Every structure is written in structure tokens, then in C-alpha cells.
Length: 181
View 1 (cartoon, helix red, strand yellow):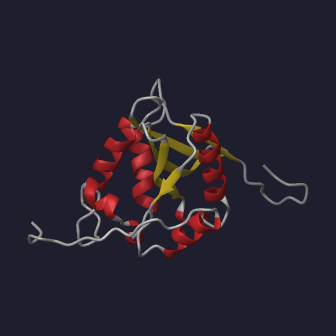
View 2: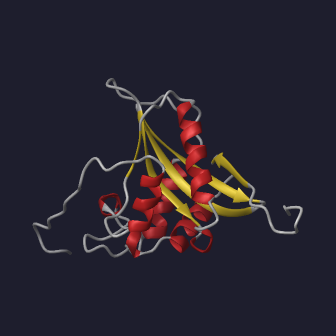
């Protein structure tokens, strides 16, 4: 879309992913647009990365399985559920992510497991718009608390989330007790 002065206008369209979206496409996008600074404890615990912080050779497969399991389910009121989302500018995929919903007795909350923006378009405000969409979408499910975690070596992501109202609540530490295999 063009502005009156001929400059291109960004038009981000966000949606929950359903079975019409290829989980492999989402995984390929993820793999292309994350760097080593993205690795946090979640990536290590899920098998996406090794304890030394390097990506697993199985990253695309692991992430593909995660996206496949998170395609738009019928009900979001299960105790634990993850949903995939994607953002498009015209028909170009520019961001993907996973949101985990937790409906527990002490109160429901959600976790941004992933929010990955096209690496060449991170200054175009896609992340800001995607986060605003996530916040609005999850509030429709009665979610009042949203968590996210970023890698300690990813100061840009930490700055992004802090500027949007997130604050640190913990530090995760790792110690290897046995040699890596």
C-alpha cells in the first residue's frame, strides 16, 4: 500500500494459525530469522539448542513440531495450550510466534514463547504491532498477565519488551553436572 507521497505504508495483518498454514513454512521462517543471541533456557530445555548455546541440527524439525502442535485449536480453555500466530504485510510473512496459555486456579496467564520478526525488517515496527495484537487477542480470553523471556545475550529484545511495559521478575541459571554428549 502506498501513502499519498508515494512511500510504502506498512499494513500488518495478524492471525492465529490454523491448518491452512504450513507449520514447516513457519519453522523455516523461524530458523532463517533467529540468531545465536536468541538462545535462552527454553531453547535448551526444548531441544532447540545445546547447553553451550549453539543451535541443534534438529532445530527446524523441533520448531516444526511445535508449530504443528500449536495450529489453531477449537478451544483455548484447556489447562495448558499453545497457539501459533503469524503476521503478514500484504502476502509476505514478516513475523511468527507461539503463545502458551495457562488456565490455572491461581489465575490465568500467557507466555510469549516466541516472537520472531523478519531480520531485515526489525526497525519497521512489526514487532510493536504484533505485540499489541497479542495483548489484545489474549485479553479476550480473560488473560490479565503476560510473561516473556529473552536470552541474556539479547539486549535488543530486552529493551524492546521493557519499553512496552515488561519488567524483569527472575534470572534463570544453568549448571552442567555431566559432560555434554
